[in-house]
Length: 460
Image (cartoon, rainbow, N blue to C red; front, side):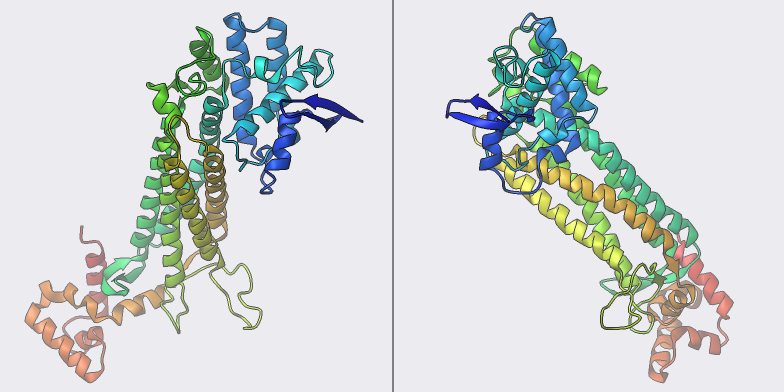
């Protein structure tokens, strides 16, 4: 069985069980570009339902919608908020209509489910109309960017928690490795003594800072263009609608949401998305840098630096027996590359807006959601499967430190520049380590050397 629906282009058949309508059907046919449909993004669907629910209550409050229709629309929205009917949101997230198909998919699902709640058949739009009733006081141009902002706000706590979780895992290792002496390196060359704990403490601090920057940046998304309708004039919304819709929406979402001070700015510009996306990118770059460092530090003790050991989670080669690769840091490097690419897409889409609106919010949404999901999941996996199991190879780290003539500077205050310089040259000419030369000359004992290195590593 099928039902017929007609739009300005013609009449089409829809599956009888479908809650979506002809506008959605055309979008399915026109924009089948990726496997990612809007129904795969629950936070985005909930955001759209919150907006439609608040709009129905606001329109009823100002006399633009009958109470019975409001109640049916609100009930339908609540079902969506509970996780029902998400399989009916079938438009591709990268649809090419600037969000119109996404908005109409939502309007049609809500309208048809509301009709069923009232005892009518789907498609009886003379009773509840997707445009006239569900979309009353709205346009795609203010609904979609508002919904994207709400979705990012919903997803942000999980991301912020995961980044903090990873930062705490790094801090735990910083505490554990507080007394592990090693050589610090600049330009991949030996520099000065430090501890492995200090190295991991720097990683943790950077990630805590990245987390806090995301928290601060996402607060800006509480400012919405909703109520500006098509271009910022508010044309299409009745007097009193905007104040009411923000009141109801804030109550339902549980966050104080407010309209843009300048609605034309709110409709034209996507810089708030670009700013938040850039913080995702920076957080990813911090993790990517940490991952690269761990790969270098864990390189084999005989052929590399070998100051830490990463957990062995799987065989590293199909041809080289016993080889173990740093697969989890490598995974996070790939997450970094993906997030950097996503941010580039958001940046291009933001600057690509034309005149009074940005038509590229679907790709902005797609890339931002992807970045958040990658970082949220990746940070926890990285913390649990890699960071928590990092081991310090204390003897190798100390050996690397003692083998370096770069630590000669540590002993200048005690022995004087001229004498230290002479010992360095003599040790090099005789093929000895600088430290061994000090000990052989009875200038210092090994214990004195270690003590001096600890003091140098904690000079502050």
